[in-house]
Structures are given as structure tokens and as C-alpha cells.
Length: 366
Image 1 (cartoon, rainbow, N blue to C red):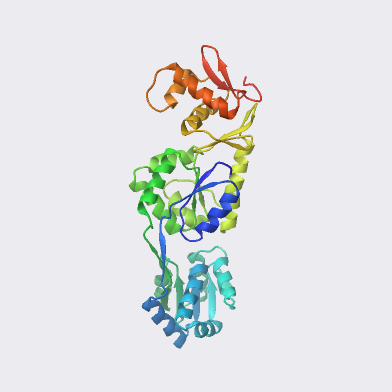
Image 2 (image 1 turned 180 degrees about the horizontal axis):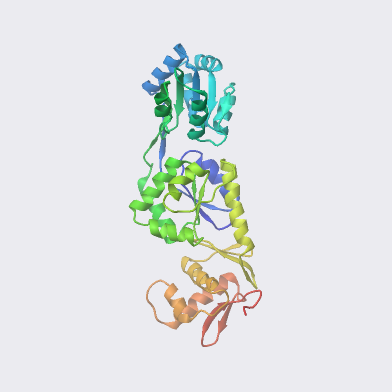
């Protein structure tokens, strides 16, 4: 991923995700679309926790690993952790996915059933098929709310207790989110990474409000921008807007990083083969034979123009059009190409007398 600029839209575990991508050569831009507000001192959560400790439910549904851990941290801060553990050890625990299961096991407990699809729909389907009428069900919710579980179980005759452990808040820096939307639209970013459905919804909504959804969609369709989501639920707000996504086979941060790395490895395999080695043009840099070229933004655009021609001749007028300003002086094009040659090597770009310039390919075009 050398030379790739990746936008991380998450606040939670952003440093871990950024570090994993940076180890692969990526440059990171960070613009959290939402903030996460813990409920450590939320009296409603504490009251609900005390209530189910005093009168244990039949079933406890755990929807997220981070929420379950935060629930225990809140209980521990108020001297309730031991009582909460004892209560959970005596009831049926249902986990919405492997991450929730991992958090449960880390607390020394074991789930009775795990929804491998990581969806609330699977949790509802299984419990409703068994029958919930007359049961008391406690549900630990994630920041986006109930996912409809409360209503579904109540309509089926269950008594439901909701425990919202954290909630989503506004972006820590709204201006940074708007700026990231604009950057994605104009080509300053190679990939955007999403780790939650609320986060992807908030970011794409910012794109819509900035009036650049069409530009972002066009870049995605042209394979110039990758939208990488940790799983289908996270991807849904994007795909609802007609934006294709890259997803790993398993919904994990590590798998997401590997999927993104694999994507760029495939791109490298079809890079433009030049006499100086494989050439790839990123959003803001160019990579030649595995080396990131120290080019100015203008240099990148001129090289992008030449690469897009695939070995065909690019006229001086076309080079001038790629330069900032509105110069019509052929000398400006000559200077831009000369600077490009100084950085990329003199053999890469050939001057075609009275016609313009072209990239020298490893195999000459027919």
C-alpha cells in the first residue's frame, strides 16, 4: 500500500487500525464521523443493572463485545461487578457474534448460543422460533439503539429490559469530516475505511450534505476510490446509495486490513509496465518499481495524464491543460516534463518531436 492515502472514519480502535495500515506503507488521514459516549455514570444503566441483579431475567442478549466490556466497567466502578457476574452465570446468555462471545468469555462466562452472522435478525429468528412468550429478556444494546429486538420480543409476549451501555455522539470535529468528504470527491484519498454502520451512515450523509455524492460515486465506479467496510451491516448505508464496497470474508479489523492490502496487491499485478518498472498512480503520489516518487501535485497529475494514455502520445496542449493556471506557453509544458524526468528518470518519458510526450512502456504499444 505504499503511497496510498487511507481515510479512517472511526474513533474506536482508530489508532490500532491506523498502525496496521501504516505498517503496510499507507498514509493515514483521520476524521471520525461519530464519537462514542460511554455510560459509566449513567443512572439509568445502573438502575437497570441493579434491577436485573435483584431479579434475574431468563435470557440476556449481548449485542457487542465493546458494549459488554463497558457494561462490566460501569458495574465495577459502582461495586456491582461481582454481583453482575454471579447473576449472568445463572441465566441463558445469547451472543450476537464472535466479538460478543469473546468479551463474554473474557469475563469468565460462556454464551449458550452465538449468532455467527453477527446480526440481530438471526438472534430474533432463533429466540422467536423457540418461543419467548412469558420470558424476561435483558438486552445489552450498542450505541445505535435496539435494532428492533425490543419491539419484536415484546410483541411476542416477552418482558424486555434494555441496557444501553454507550451511545453514538456527534463527530469530534465536524469540519474535518466535511473536509474528508471533499477530499474523497476530488481525488486526494485512495481508500475510506468503515468499522460500524452508524459511522458509515454519518460519513456518507456528510458527503450528501456537502453535495459531492455523485463525485464520490463516480470515483468508486472508476476504481479510483475504495470504500472498505468491515462487514455487510457496516456496508449497507453505502450500498443503499449505490456505492460498491470492499469487504473481508470475516468481520474483523485484521481481516479488513488484509482485504485492503490484497486489493492493492492485485492492482500492482496489473500496473502499467514501463521501462523503469511497474507504475501505479495513487491519489497524491506515484509508485515506480516499488519506490514512492517525491513528486509535486502537479507532477502527479502530469504523470497520471501520460499513464492514462498507455504509451500513446500526449500533446503539449494536453500537458498544459493539466497544469495549474491557464498558461498557453509551450515552455511551461516542457518545464513540467523536465521536472518529472528529474524525479522519475530520464528513460521513462520520451519526447516525440513536434507531437508531444509519451511514457516508454516495457513492451511498445501496437
